[in-house]
Length: 257
Length: 243
Image (cartoon, rainbow over all chains, first blue to last red):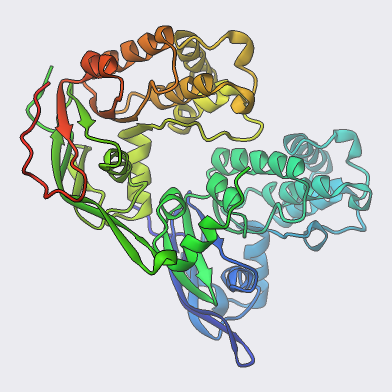
Protein backbone atom coordinates (compact mmCIF):
# COMPACT_ATOMS: atom_id res chain seq x y z
CA UNK A 1 0.00 0.00 0.00
CA UNK A 2 1.21 3.47 -0.86
CA UNK A 3 1.82 6.04 1.84
CA UNK A 4 0.00 9.31 2.41
CA UNK A 5 0.10 11.95 -0.32
CA UNK A 6 0.36 14.90 2.07
CA UNK A 7 1.39 14.89 5.71
CA UNK A 8 1.23 17.72 8.18
CA UNK A 9 3.19 17.34 11.38
CA UNK A 10 2.82 19.83 14.21
CA UNK A 11 2.08 22.76 11.89
CA UNK A 12 2.01 26.02 13.87
CA UNK A 13 1.70 29.58 12.61
CA UNK A 14 1.76 32.81 14.62
CA UNK A 15 0.96 36.33 13.54
CA UNK A 16 2.83 38.47 16.06
CA UNK A 17 1.69 37.25 19.47
CA UNK A 18 -1.47 35.61 18.14
CA UNK A 19 -1.46 31.94 17.27
CA UNK A 20 -3.39 31.33 14.03
CA UNK A 21 -2.97 27.58 14.02
CA UNK A 22 -1.35 25.33 16.55
CA UNK A 23 0.20 21.90 16.31
CA UNK A 24 -1.90 20.51 13.45
CA UNK A 25 -1.03 16.99 12.29
CA UNK A 26 -2.77 14.71 9.81
CA UNK A 27 -2.19 12.44 6.81
CA UNK A 28 -4.08 12.85 3.56
CA UNK A 29 -4.31 9.61 1.58
CA UNK A 30 -4.64 9.34 -2.21
CA UNK A 31 -8.24 9.88 -3.31
CA UNK A 32 -9.29 11.43 0.00
CA UNK A 33 -11.11 14.72 0.33
CA UNK A 34 -10.46 16.35 3.69
CA UNK A 35 -12.67 19.19 4.87
CA UNK A 36 -11.50 21.81 7.36
CA UNK A 37 -14.45 23.48 9.08
CA UNK A 38 -14.83 26.09 11.79
CA UNK A 39 -15.96 29.67 12.22
CA UNK A 40 -14.22 32.69 10.69
CA UNK A 41 -10.98 33.29 12.52
CA UNK A 42 -10.55 29.67 13.56
CA UNK A 43 -7.35 29.37 11.50
CA UNK A 44 -8.70 27.31 8.57
CA UNK A 45 -7.35 29.48 5.78
CA UNK A 46 -4.01 30.02 7.51
CA UNK A 47 -3.63 26.26 7.81
CA UNK A 48 -4.57 25.77 4.14
CA UNK A 49 -1.98 28.34 3.07
CA UNK A 50 0.68 26.61 5.17
CA UNK A 51 -0.23 23.25 3.60
CA UNK A 52 -0.08 24.66 0.09
CA UNK A 53 3.32 26.26 0.67
CA UNK A 54 1.96 29.78 0.39
CA UNK A 55 2.74 30.66 3.99
CA UNK A 56 5.77 29.43 5.95
CA UNK A 57 4.79 27.86 9.29
CA UNK A 58 6.69 28.82 12.44
CA UNK A 59 6.82 25.22 13.54
CA UNK A 60 6.19 21.77 12.17
CA UNK A 61 6.49 20.41 8.66
CA UNK A 62 4.45 19.63 5.58
CA UNK A 63 5.59 16.78 3.37
CA UNK A 64 4.24 15.73 -0.01
CA UNK A 65 4.91 12.68 -2.13
CA UNK A 66 5.76 13.96 -5.61
CA UNK A 67 5.23 11.92 -8.76
CA UNK A 68 8.90 11.89 -9.76
CA UNK A 69 11.06 13.02 -6.86
CA UNK A 70 9.74 11.06 -3.89
CA UNK A 71 8.73 12.72 -0.64
CA UNK A 72 9.64 16.40 -0.30
CA UNK A 73 9.35 18.89 2.53
CA UNK A 74 7.17 21.57 1.00
CA UNK A 75 8.77 24.37 2.98
CA UNK A 76 12.34 23.29 2.29
CA UNK A 77 11.94 23.38 -1.48
CA UNK A 78 13.40 26.27 -3.42
CA UNK A 79 10.88 28.89 -4.44
CA UNK A 80 11.23 27.79 -8.07
CA UNK A 81 10.53 24.13 -7.29
CA UNK A 82 7.59 24.99 -5.08
CA UNK A 83 6.08 27.09 -7.85
CA UNK A 84 6.61 24.29 -10.32
CA UNK A 85 4.85 21.89 -7.95
CA UNK A 86 1.97 24.35 -7.51
CA UNK A 87 1.57 24.65 -11.29
CA UNK A 88 1.88 20.98 -12.15
CA UNK A 89 0.85 18.52 -9.44
CA UNK A 90 -1.33 20.89 -7.41
CA UNK A 91 -4.27 23.18 -7.91
CA UNK A 92 -5.54 25.99 -5.71
CA UNK A 93 -9.11 27.25 -5.96
CA UNK A 94 -9.50 30.62 -4.25
CA UNK A 95 -12.73 31.87 -2.75
CA UNK A 96 -12.52 34.96 -4.94
CA UNK A 97 -11.96 33.81 -8.52
CA UNK A 98 -10.21 37.10 -9.26
CA UNK A 99 -7.33 35.92 -7.07
CA UNK A 100 -6.95 32.72 -9.06
CA UNK A 101 -7.50 34.03 -12.60
CA UNK A 102 -5.67 36.51 -14.75
CA UNK A 103 -8.40 39.00 -15.36
CA UNK A 104 -6.61 40.79 -18.19
CA UNK A 105 -6.41 37.84 -20.59
CA UNK A 106 -9.06 35.69 -22.25
CA UNK A 107 -10.70 32.67 -20.64
CA UNK A 108 -8.96 30.46 -23.18
CA UNK A 109 -5.59 31.92 -22.23
CA UNK A 110 -6.36 31.36 -18.55
CA UNK A 111 -6.84 27.67 -19.22
CA UNK A 112 -4.06 27.41 -21.83
CA UNK A 113 -1.49 29.01 -19.57
CA UNK A 114 -1.69 26.08 -17.14
CA UNK A 115 -1.27 23.63 -20.00
CA UNK A 116 1.81 25.46 -21.26
CA UNK A 117 3.23 25.32 -17.74
CA UNK A 118 3.18 21.54 -17.99
CA UNK A 119 4.79 21.55 -21.41
CA UNK A 120 2.01 21.85 -24.00
CA UNK A 121 3.22 23.77 -27.04
CA UNK A 122 0.85 22.97 -29.89
CA UNK A 123 -1.57 25.90 -30.20
CA UNK A 124 -4.38 23.87 -31.79
CA UNK A 125 -4.17 21.22 -29.08
CA UNK A 126 -4.21 23.81 -26.30
CA UNK A 127 -7.23 25.53 -27.81
CA UNK A 128 -9.05 22.24 -28.26
CA UNK A 129 -8.34 21.25 -24.64
CA UNK A 130 -9.46 24.69 -23.43
CA UNK A 131 -12.76 24.31 -25.29
CA UNK A 132 -13.21 20.83 -23.85
CA UNK A 133 -12.75 22.16 -20.31
CA UNK A 134 -15.04 25.14 -20.91
CA UNK A 135 -17.74 22.60 -21.83
CA UNK A 136 -16.98 20.41 -18.81
CA UNK A 137 -17.51 23.34 -16.48
CA UNK A 138 -20.63 24.34 -18.44
CA UNK A 139 -19.41 27.55 -20.01
CA UNK A 140 -20.37 28.19 -23.66
CA UNK A 141 -17.36 27.57 -25.87
CA UNK A 142 -18.08 30.81 -27.73
CA UNK A 143 -17.04 32.72 -24.59
CA UNK A 144 -13.49 31.33 -24.98
CA UNK A 145 -12.01 34.59 -26.23
CA UNK A 146 -13.79 36.80 -23.69
CA UNK A 147 -12.00 38.04 -20.63
CA UNK A 148 -13.19 36.84 -17.21
CA UNK A 149 -14.05 40.47 -16.37
CA UNK A 150 -17.12 39.96 -18.59
CA UNK A 151 -18.14 36.78 -16.72
CA UNK A 152 -20.61 36.44 -13.84
CA UNK A 153 -19.33 35.37 -10.41
CA UNK A 154 -20.45 31.76 -10.90
CA UNK A 155 -18.87 31.56 -14.37
CA UNK A 156 -15.60 32.95 -13.04
CA UNK A 157 -15.55 30.34 -10.32
CA UNK A 158 -16.15 27.58 -12.88
CA UNK A 159 -13.39 29.02 -15.07
CA UNK A 160 -11.03 29.04 -12.10
CA UNK A 161 -11.86 25.37 -11.52
CA UNK A 162 -11.18 24.57 -15.18
CA UNK A 163 -7.86 26.44 -15.05
CA UNK A 164 -6.86 24.40 -12.02
CA UNK A 165 -7.92 21.01 -13.26
CA UNK A 166 -6.86 21.17 -16.91
CA UNK A 167 -3.30 20.21 -16.03
CA UNK A 168 -4.58 17.12 -14.19
CA UNK A 169 -3.29 17.90 -10.69
CA UNK A 170 -3.15 15.17 -8.06
CA UNK A 171 -3.97 17.43 -5.14
CA UNK A 172 -6.26 20.44 -5.07
CA UNK A 173 -6.55 22.99 -2.27
CA UNK A 174 -9.87 24.82 -2.10
CA UNK A 175 -10.66 27.84 0.03
CA UNK A 176 -14.43 28.36 0.35
CA UNK A 177 -14.98 27.54 -3.36
CA UNK A 178 -18.68 28.38 -3.17
CA UNK A 179 -18.43 31.29 -0.70
CA UNK A 180 -20.18 34.46 -1.78
CA UNK A 181 -22.21 32.83 -4.56
CA UNK A 182 -26.01 32.54 -4.90
CA UNK A 183 -27.33 29.21 -3.67
CA UNK A 184 -28.43 28.09 -7.16
CA UNK A 185 -24.97 28.91 -8.51
CA UNK A 186 -23.48 27.17 -5.47
CA UNK A 187 -25.43 23.98 -6.17
CA UNK A 188 -24.14 23.92 -9.74
CA UNK A 189 -20.52 24.32 -8.63
CA UNK A 190 -20.88 21.72 -5.89
CA UNK A 191 -22.33 19.26 -8.38
CA UNK A 192 -19.48 20.02 -10.77
CA UNK A 193 -16.77 19.66 -8.11
CA UNK A 194 -18.31 16.46 -6.84
CA UNK A 195 -18.25 14.89 -10.30
CA UNK A 196 -14.72 16.08 -11.08
CA UNK A 197 -13.18 15.01 -7.77
CA UNK A 198 -14.70 11.57 -8.15
CA UNK A 199 -14.07 11.18 -11.87
CA UNK A 200 -10.43 12.34 -11.75
CA UNK A 201 -9.75 10.52 -8.45
CA UNK A 202 -8.39 13.76 -7.00
CA UNK A 203 -7.21 14.28 -3.48
CA UNK A 204 -8.30 17.56 -1.99
CA UNK A 205 -8.20 19.75 1.09
CA UNK A 206 -11.28 21.94 1.28
CA UNK A 207 -11.80 24.82 3.67
CA UNK A 208 -15.41 25.78 4.28
CA UNK A 209 -17.61 27.19 7.00
CA UNK A 210 -20.63 25.57 5.34
CA UNK A 211 -21.30 22.15 6.88
CA UNK A 212 -23.65 21.28 3.99
CA UNK A 213 -20.81 21.78 1.52
CA UNK A 214 -18.57 19.67 3.75
CA UNK A 215 -21.12 16.85 3.87
CA UNK A 216 -21.51 16.82 0.12
CA UNK A 217 -17.87 16.97 -0.88
CA UNK A 218 -15.64 15.55 1.83
CA UNK A 219 -14.80 12.12 3.22
CA UNK A 220 -13.19 13.35 6.41
CA UNK A 221 -13.47 16.44 8.54
CA UNK A 222 -11.21 18.38 10.86
CA UNK A 223 -13.01 20.86 13.11
CA UNK A 224 -10.95 23.90 14.10
CA UNK A 225 -11.52 26.30 16.95
CA UNK A 226 -9.11 29.02 17.99
CA UNK A 227 -6.34 27.60 15.80
CA UNK A 228 -6.58 24.06 17.17
CA UNK A 229 -8.13 20.92 15.73
CA UNK A 230 -10.74 19.99 18.34
CA UNK A 231 -12.25 17.00 16.55
CA UNK A 232 -11.64 14.93 13.45
CA UNK A 233 -13.13 11.88 11.82
CA UNK A 234 -15.39 10.53 9.12
CA UNK A 235 -17.53 13.39 7.78
CA UNK A 236 -20.98 11.91 8.43
CA UNK A 237 -19.90 10.72 11.88
CA UNK A 238 -18.57 14.14 12.91
CA UNK A 239 -21.78 15.81 11.68
CA UNK A 240 -24.28 13.22 12.97
CA UNK A 241 -22.55 12.31 16.24
CA UNK A 242 -20.34 15.29 17.13
CA UNK A 243 -18.25 14.69 20.24
CA UNK A 244 -16.67 18.04 21.10
CA UNK A 245 -18.72 20.86 22.64
CA UNK A 246 -17.71 23.24 19.84
CA UNK A 247 -18.70 20.78 17.08
CA UNK A 248 -22.01 20.12 18.81
CA UNK A 249 -22.62 23.85 18.88
CA UNK A 250 -21.71 24.22 15.17
CA UNK A 251 -23.98 21.36 14.11
CA UNK A 252 -26.82 22.63 16.30
CA UNK A 253 -26.50 26.09 14.74
CA UNK A 254 -27.47 24.94 11.23
CA UNK A 255 -30.77 26.45 10.18
CA UNK A 256 -33.13 23.74 9.02
CA UNK A 257 -34.64 24.46 5.58
CA UNK B 1 -28.44 -20.99 3.33
CA UNK B 2 -27.00 -20.19 6.75
CA UNK B 3 -23.25 -20.57 6.79
CA UNK B 4 -21.50 -21.14 10.06
CA UNK B 5 -19.00 -18.33 9.61
CA UNK B 6 -20.40 -14.92 10.57
CA UNK B 7 -20.03 -11.90 8.30
CA UNK B 8 -20.48 -9.42 11.15
CA UNK B 9 -19.59 -9.88 14.79
CA UNK B 10 -20.25 -7.40 17.57
CA UNK B 11 -19.23 -7.72 21.20
CA UNK B 12 -19.14 -5.47 24.23
CA UNK B 13 -20.46 -2.54 22.19
CA UNK B 14 -21.06 0.52 24.33
CA UNK B 15 -22.35 3.90 23.25
CA UNK B 16 -23.54 6.98 25.09
CA UNK B 17 -24.18 10.53 23.99
CA UNK B 18 -22.66 13.41 25.94
CA UNK B 19 -24.62 16.64 25.47
CA UNK B 20 -22.20 19.45 26.27
CA UNK B 21 -24.85 22.17 26.00
CA UNK B 22 -26.73 20.45 28.85
CA UNK B 23 -23.87 20.52 31.32
CA UNK B 24 -22.16 17.46 29.81
CA UNK B 25 -25.30 15.38 30.33
CA UNK B 26 -24.52 11.74 29.64
CA UNK B 27 -27.16 9.62 27.91
CA UNK B 28 -26.12 5.98 27.93
CA UNK B 29 -27.81 4.08 25.09
CA UNK B 30 -25.97 0.87 24.33
CA UNK B 31 -24.27 -1.27 26.92
CA UNK B 32 -22.36 -4.42 26.22
CA UNK B 33 -24.23 -5.32 23.03
CA UNK B 34 -23.23 -8.61 21.44
CA UNK B 35 -24.54 -10.09 18.21
CA UNK B 36 -23.36 -12.00 15.23
CA UNK B 37 -24.86 -12.40 11.76
CA UNK B 38 -23.97 -15.00 9.15
CA UNK B 39 -24.50 -14.92 5.39
CA UNK B 40 -28.13 -15.74 4.54
CA UNK B 41 -29.42 -14.50 7.91
CA UNK B 42 -31.61 -11.50 8.55
CA UNK B 43 -31.51 -10.31 12.14
CA UNK B 44 -34.40 -8.05 13.16
CA UNK B 45 -33.71 -5.59 15.97
CA UNK B 46 -36.74 -5.34 18.23
CA UNK B 47 -37.45 -3.30 21.32
CA UNK B 48 -39.51 -0.35 22.48
CA UNK B 49 -39.13 3.08 20.93
CA UNK B 50 -36.06 4.79 22.38
CA UNK B 51 -34.33 1.54 23.26
CA UNK B 52 -31.47 2.35 20.89
CA UNK B 53 -32.20 0.23 17.81
CA UNK B 54 -31.31 3.02 15.38
CA UNK B 55 -28.29 3.98 17.46
CA UNK B 56 -27.09 0.38 17.26
CA UNK B 57 -27.59 0.23 13.50
CA UNK B 58 -25.84 3.56 12.96
CA UNK B 59 -22.97 2.50 15.20
CA UNK B 60 -22.52 -0.64 13.10
CA UNK B 61 -22.19 1.57 10.02
CA UNK B 62 -19.70 3.89 11.73
CA UNK B 63 -22.13 6.79 11.45
CA UNK B 64 -22.17 6.99 15.25
CA UNK B 65 -18.94 6.62 17.17
CA UNK B 66 -18.86 3.66 19.54
CA UNK B 67 -17.34 4.33 22.96
CA UNK B 68 -15.99 0.82 23.34
CA UNK B 69 -16.28 -2.79 22.33
CA UNK B 70 -15.77 -4.36 18.97
CA UNK B 71 -17.53 -4.36 15.59
CA UNK B 72 -15.82 -6.71 13.20
CA UNK B 73 -16.67 -7.18 9.56
CA UNK B 74 -15.50 -10.02 7.36
CA UNK B 75 -13.69 -8.62 4.34
CA UNK B 76 -11.06 -10.19 2.09
CA UNK B 77 -11.17 -13.37 4.20
CA UNK B 78 -10.15 -11.47 7.32
CA UNK B 79 -11.76 -9.50 10.14
CA UNK B 80 -11.70 -5.72 9.92
CA UNK B 81 -12.28 -3.90 13.21
CA UNK B 82 -14.44 -0.79 12.87
CA UNK B 83 -14.37 0.57 16.44
CA UNK B 84 -11.60 3.16 16.51
CA UNK B 85 -10.75 2.54 12.84
CA UNK B 86 -9.31 5.20 10.54
CA UNK B 87 -11.92 6.95 8.34
CA UNK B 88 -10.43 5.35 5.22
CA UNK B 89 -10.89 1.87 6.68
CA UNK B 90 -14.56 2.56 7.41
CA UNK B 91 -15.04 4.07 3.94
CA UNK B 92 -13.43 1.03 2.33
CA UNK B 93 -15.79 -1.29 4.24
CA UNK B 94 -18.78 0.84 3.19
CA UNK B 95 -17.55 0.91 -0.37
CA UNK B 96 -17.13 -2.83 -0.78
CA UNK B 97 -18.84 -4.72 2.01
CA UNK B 98 -21.54 -2.93 3.97
CA UNK B 99 -24.57 -1.03 2.66
CA UNK B 100 -27.04 1.04 4.66
CA UNK B 101 -30.64 1.89 3.82
CA UNK B 102 -31.83 4.83 5.87
CA UNK B 103 -35.37 6.10 6.11
CA UNK B 104 -34.58 9.33 4.35
CA UNK B 105 -32.82 10.19 1.15
CA UNK B 106 -30.19 12.87 1.40
CA UNK B 107 -30.94 14.79 -1.76
CA UNK B 108 -28.02 15.95 -3.87
CA UNK B 109 -28.81 19.15 -5.78
CA UNK B 110 -29.17 18.76 -9.55
CA UNK B 111 -28.41 15.04 -9.71
CA UNK B 112 -31.11 12.94 -11.42
CA UNK B 113 -32.77 9.99 -9.68
CA UNK B 114 -31.16 7.48 -12.03
CA UNK B 115 -27.69 8.94 -11.39
CA UNK B 116 -28.30 9.01 -7.62
CA UNK B 117 -29.07 5.30 -7.82
CA UNK B 118 -26.23 4.43 -10.23
CA UNK B 119 -23.54 6.31 -8.28
CA UNK B 120 -22.40 3.56 -5.87
CA UNK B 121 -21.95 1.17 -8.80
CA UNK B 122 -20.09 3.78 -10.89
CA UNK B 123 -17.79 4.43 -7.94
CA UNK B 124 -16.86 0.79 -7.92
CA UNK B 125 -15.68 1.14 -11.48
CA UNK B 126 -18.70 -0.11 -13.45
CA UNK B 127 -19.28 1.23 -16.94
CA UNK B 128 -21.57 4.28 -16.67
CA UNK B 129 -23.99 2.81 -19.24
CA UNK B 130 -24.15 -0.51 -17.39
CA UNK B 131 -24.62 1.25 -14.02
CA UNK B 132 -27.42 3.29 -15.54
CA UNK B 133 -29.15 0.22 -16.96
CA UNK B 134 -29.07 -1.49 -13.61
CA UNK B 135 -30.33 1.68 -11.89
CA UNK B 136 -33.26 1.88 -14.31
CA UNK B 137 -34.03 -1.79 -13.72
CA UNK B 138 -34.19 -1.25 -9.95
CA UNK B 139 -36.23 1.95 -10.23
CA UNK B 140 -38.72 0.12 -12.45
CA UNK B 141 -38.86 -2.80 -10.06
CA UNK B 142 -39.60 -0.44 -7.19
CA UNK B 143 -42.39 1.22 -9.13
CA UNK B 144 -40.83 4.62 -9.83
CA UNK B 145 -42.41 5.86 -13.11
CA UNK B 146 -39.89 6.24 -15.95
CA UNK B 147 -40.82 9.89 -16.46
CA UNK B 148 -39.26 10.67 -13.06
CA UNK B 149 -35.92 8.96 -13.66
CA UNK B 150 -34.17 11.96 -15.18
CA UNK B 151 -35.41 14.38 -12.49
CA UNK B 152 -33.59 15.21 -9.25
CA UNK B 153 -35.54 13.50 -6.44
CA UNK B 154 -35.84 16.70 -4.35
CA UNK B 155 -39.46 17.16 -5.43
CA UNK B 156 -40.46 13.48 -5.14
CA UNK B 157 -42.93 12.28 -2.51
CA UNK B 158 -41.60 10.73 0.71
CA UNK B 159 -42.36 7.22 -0.52
CA UNK B 160 -40.72 7.83 -3.88
CA UNK B 161 -37.60 9.23 -2.23
CA UNK B 162 -37.42 6.25 0.05
CA UNK B 163 -37.61 3.87 -2.89
CA UNK B 164 -34.87 5.81 -4.72
CA UNK B 165 -32.83 5.43 -1.55
CA UNK B 166 -33.47 1.69 -1.41
CA UNK B 167 -32.52 1.30 -5.06
CA UNK B 168 -29.29 3.22 -4.41
CA UNK B 169 -28.41 1.01 -1.48
CA UNK B 170 -29.27 -2.25 -3.21
CA UNK B 171 -27.62 -1.58 -6.57
CA UNK B 172 -24.39 -3.01 -5.19
CA UNK B 173 -24.50 -6.61 -3.90
CA UNK B 174 -23.12 -5.78 -0.47
CA UNK B 175 -22.31 -8.87 1.61
CA UNK B 176 -23.71 -7.02 4.66
CA UNK B 177 -26.84 -4.87 4.60
CA UNK B 178 -28.15 -2.61 7.36
CA UNK B 179 -31.80 -1.59 6.97
CA UNK B 180 -33.41 1.17 9.05
CA UNK B 181 -37.17 0.94 8.50
CA UNK B 182 -36.87 0.35 4.75
CA UNK B 183 -40.66 0.22 4.28
CA UNK B 184 -41.67 3.02 6.68
CA UNK B 185 -43.52 5.32 4.27
CA UNK B 186 -44.54 2.86 1.55
CA UNK B 187 -47.99 1.67 0.52
CA UNK B 188 -48.78 -2.05 0.46
CA UNK B 189 -47.85 -2.69 -3.18
CA UNK B 190 -44.50 -0.93 -2.93
CA UNK B 191 -43.82 -2.51 0.42
CA UNK B 192 -44.17 -5.96 -1.12
CA UNK B 193 -41.66 -5.03 -3.84
CA UNK B 194 -39.12 -4.00 -1.21
CA UNK B 195 -39.75 -7.13 0.86
CA UNK B 196 -39.16 -9.25 -2.22
CA UNK B 197 -35.84 -7.48 -2.94
CA UNK B 198 -34.66 -7.95 0.66
CA UNK B 199 -35.56 -11.66 0.58
CA UNK B 200 -33.69 -12.08 -2.67
CA UNK B 201 -30.60 -10.50 -1.13
CA UNK B 202 -30.88 -12.61 1.99
CA UNK B 203 -31.31 -15.84 0.03
CA UNK B 204 -28.38 -14.89 -2.20
CA UNK B 205 -26.24 -14.87 0.94
CA UNK B 206 -26.28 -11.33 2.30
CA UNK B 207 -26.02 -10.93 6.07
CA UNK B 208 -28.75 -8.47 7.04
CA UNK B 209 -29.49 -6.48 10.19
CA UNK B 210 -32.66 -4.42 10.16
CA UNK B 211 -35.31 -2.49 12.03
CA UNK B 212 -38.81 -3.35 10.80
CA UNK B 213 -41.70 -1.89 12.76
CA UNK B 214 -44.22 -3.52 10.45
CA UNK B 215 -44.56 -7.03 11.89
CA UNK B 216 -45.73 -8.38 8.53
CA UNK B 217 -42.52 -7.18 6.92
CA UNK B 218 -40.47 -8.48 9.83
CA UNK B 219 -42.04 -11.94 9.62
CA UNK B 220 -41.45 -12.00 5.87
CA UNK B 221 -37.74 -11.20 5.97
CA UNK B 222 -36.27 -11.93 9.41
CA UNK B 223 -34.71 -15.26 10.31
CA UNK B 224 -33.96 -14.24 13.93
CA UNK B 225 -34.69 -11.36 16.25
CA UNK B 226 -32.37 -9.53 18.61
CA UNK B 227 -33.92 -7.65 21.49
CA UNK B 228 -32.54 -4.20 22.21
CA UNK B 229 -33.22 -3.17 25.79
CA UNK B 230 -33.78 0.36 27.01
CA UNK B 231 -30.59 1.66 28.67
CA UNK B 232 -32.10 1.83 32.17
CA UNK B 233 -32.41 -1.94 32.35
CA UNK B 234 -29.32 -4.04 32.90
CA UNK B 235 -28.23 -5.74 29.71
CA UNK B 236 -28.41 -9.45 29.18
CA UNK B 237 -31.28 -10.31 31.51
CA UNK B 238 -34.02 -10.58 28.91
CA UNK B 239 -34.48 -13.96 27.28
CA UNK B 240 -33.84 -13.97 23.55
CA UNK B 241 -36.97 -14.07 21.42
CA UNK B 242 -36.98 -16.66 18.68
CA UNK B 243 -38.49 -15.78 15.32
